[in-house]
Amino acid sequence: MTMAAAMQSRTAEAPARSKAGRIGQVDIVADLDEAEAVWRAFEESGHLFTPYQRFDLLGPWQQLVGKREGARPFVVIARDVEYRPLVLLPLSLRQAHGVRTACFMGGKHTTFNMGLWNVEFAAQAVLADLDALFAPLREHVDVLSLTQQPKRWHDQQNPFALLPRQSSVNGCPLLAMEPGGPPASRISNSFRRRLKSKEKKLQALAGYRYHLATTDADIVRLLDWFFRVKPARMAEQKLPNVFAEPGVEQFIRSACLARRGEGRVIDVHALECDEEVIAIFAGVADGQRLSMMFNTYTMSENARYSPGLILMRYIIDRCAERGYRSLDLGIGSDDYKRMFCKDDEDIFDSFVPLTSRGRLAAVAMSSLNRGKRLVKQNQMLLDLARSLRQAFG
Image (cartoon, rainbow, N blue to C red; front, side, top):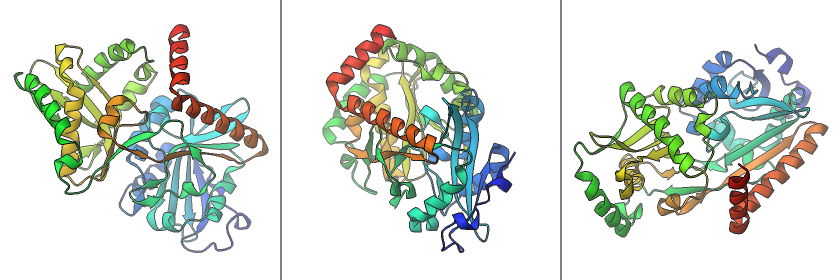
């Protein structure tokens, strides 16, 4: 079903400069099948988007996870007066406590959230364009909760960085890679030596190898192992198992098997030997950036030799050989991430009220996220929060 007819942006709501290259019409599509062709066109060159916003990643999330959580598709497509698509916002709509909230699709599983933008439009967008984009949404949405957005992507500003914003709850450690730079510019020689000496023990194992899974059979086999081992690892760390939530396993399997050029929508990198899988890291890539989504390592004795760190070194070097410019290990500042990622990606949240009811909700959401960020940045508060969660969890 589409609400396009109801949603055509009326001339009065569009900026005075409404001409080719400026927003002339805004449609809302509540059916993924109906949005698919335009969405896939936005994934071709000439567009600005992160690999987390691909249709083959967010489509399965919406169908298998979002739907179960009560989120309905709310895909916003803006076109210019000549009907050329300028931006697609992959949102889902939720209602709670009488407030209608539109968020980016993907929930806990996307490190970065962003619209899919025509590159030229994104470079020239001003606040008046964003007003024209949001005005027709007021009939359907009280507040836009636009969290975990990168300020820039591939050296271009995210147009939503023009909105009032605050730093996201969690930071995202980043490894910037200098194209053609020496191996030591990515990982220091002393760290490489430490990893090499640990790897000697693993290299003695029959069939020991690093590889990127390329066949469906390999991907299924590695995921079968992951979904057996990850719950045990999370239980050991007293962490809730997000992978056990309804629909999540099917969503991840679907995106890992979906083809993307020569690779997959989620690539699965593995370290293994003939006896067992030793470690896996899975993430999304776009030729310039690799972003990790999930990982785990063996429960066997081989875990003693830091297989996760060794696998990470292989992946970083593989990306560098292919001319990648950066790599991240997801949000949160776990110690192992800091071993590789010395910089930080600038990510922000914007809570945009579209109605008077939305104004109160936006203030509440903004305050809640500021509070969470404060706790994360204060080690004593963080330790207290963890011990309370373990006591009452």
